[in-house]
Length: 479
Image (cartoon, rainbow, N blue to C red; front, side):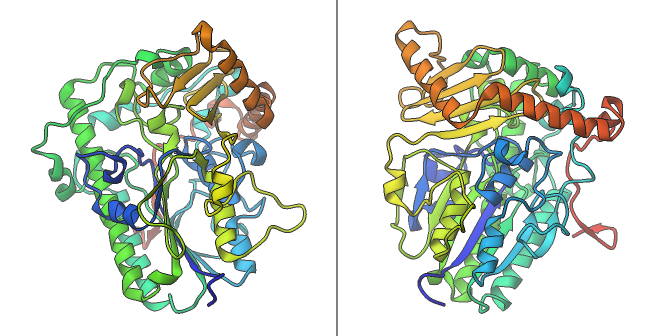
């Protein structure tokens, strides 16, 4: 292996709020292994997913494209292999490409560029058609999401058992196959995704702590689109302080459980002797509101939901570096290709830049973009992050504007201030340089209406309820 072709290890979690990590300044949550990885390399304090929901976000990570560019609108529109993934490109460059754990693509058969899928978790059937069944008609189905908060506690679930098995498989790969270099390995966990049930030893880490719960009031998030989301998931209710405490304790426990699993994988990498020749990336597909602003789950453009943790370590990467420039999941594919010395062919392109390209990251005019077209909404929402401001636009509703320098907790919506009219107009214009919001919303709804019609209409689609994607099984038992 030459220095131009390091190994690549992508470690992913699911639904990790970027504020729930020690390296980000949180003094309560215990994430020693992620903290150590951050000390080894660079942490990106303003990294964003392209859509705060699993399937679209993962399609963007695979392809380096925004979801409207690839039609990955919702949890029933999975990646099927086009456009090319980073797996395709690295495989063609001679890499052994292996995935272990959750992918959330359509199936293991499609040519997604990941030929060696181990314990792969994909969508169930056609995916979550229930979530989009009535969306093209301007209505939104309801689901009892509030149960996840009320049922929070300690114990094991299929998901925690699955993640333990993912660790075992990753350790076997690194112990027995890491000599087949160069390799690219994605290890993908489910935690801290709900259900909010954390293994006892991790739940108990927070039993004797008086957790500082976030404010339960909507405040600046008292917005029509947010009300639609809360009503859809049944969280338009006042949870008691005990309910919020227990749910927060469980979520923090799952974050620490996930951190321990990441630590086990990194220890195996070290034991393999390949650590010095391996670029390590940690991220999550999207965040989790975790009670902030009276919100739970993802789906929205608040920082807890749309921002993600992102760490990068390995040969040639400065240690303990904090990079404040806004970056995106669409930057991962260019980063992998840049690390491997691979160039896109004529006609191929990606929407991001390499995280190894400091000149590109220092571009003060860069805009980071996210969008949402899935369950809990009746119309599209769009976010642009540029400089100190974050602008959110909703179809047929008023926008929002936040100053993330002076107001990182997003407690004050500045969109109605007369002295910032020009800022709002500027950011609306920047959004339109990326896409036409109304046209994209119409395109998403047409595609969703087509898929709903294919199964026999809204009533039939609503029967496709996928509360949790089932884990893969062997002999009828979770792996």
